[in-house]
Length: 86
Image (cartoon, rainbow, N blue to C red; front, top):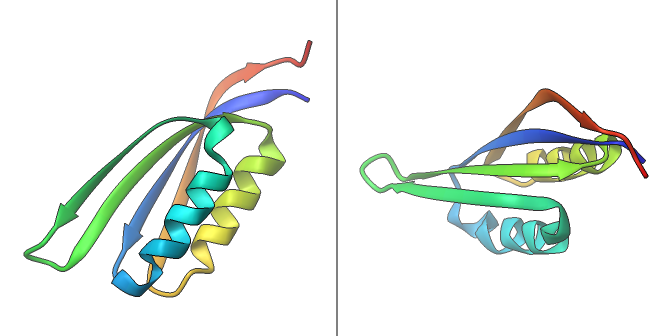
């Protein structure tokens, strides 16, 4: 299946959802190229960026599951870089 490079931007406003978010990211670890998290303590939020190289349906599934977590929002940006399956 073809893969593409994508970025999921995540904002966490409820600390109670952090464990579930980390579990999701752990499950999708084979597709994650890298991630960076920045706590913004003054505002009580954390901002996380996750870069993936994965099939379209995997990216959509992860983004959707993240967005359903309480107090967590996610937006996905897709690159035009698509790698055909071998």
